[in-house]
Image (cartoon, rainbow, N blue to C red; front, side, top):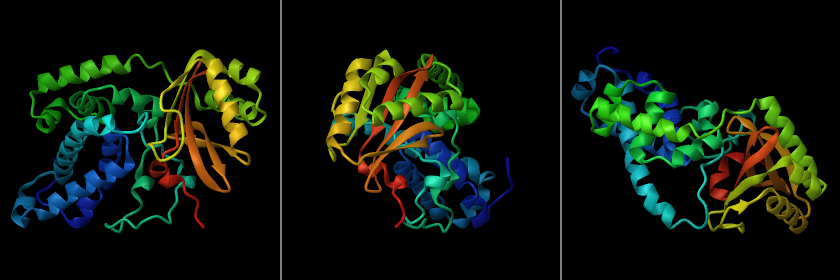
Length: 305
């Protein structure tokens, strides 16, 4: 695997893969950036002679990044017990939406967000399922099922046998199997468009028709902005809540945008993004809504100027 030693350019080239792995493991691009930066710092701290002994710097960086993420996942549960309200993954916009006026990347490379691959493995529904897994299950599942790393390499990350890692991935796979097959982008876009129109006209009856009777809406304000602290259950209750929001926020503008690679809605007021909403759709009706309102998780959605 690879050649002996590596130049700075060669190790820097691994950043795209590492960011993609870390975001899927952590559900936060901010934490993913920090984990990858930490891994590079550890690489740079190695003596040159040790670097030259490593046949595959990319594999080394992946192992170290994954271990850092594993530690963060272990502590995240305690942090989220203190989190105000529900915790949701950080939503990712389409590349055309990314704010390039943010802080500069200390490596001099492109913004880490610009290196994200948006596919079904970053859809909000998938990331929420990942949250139900233990840290070890999540690492084994993401590395093997999403990125196709062999269990022998995953064993080095988790400090377990390849057989044990295979069992962890199998257990995680059973959890993930409860999620239904994703709707096509076109099918979801149509439903989201109709939700937007009904929301704008405050048509409760139309919203109820678009929402599954057992639909659930979860909001994440992080205690920084006002929002419901517990999930709102039932299509009728969600429809009433959405209309109540529209009544209390005159001037709210709804935009159809790609959220984590699938059609979603962005609510902005006076040009400032207030909410990013993701949807899960089944049989032409919305079954789940995830509304991220925590401004710390909306930094990528900020508008330039």
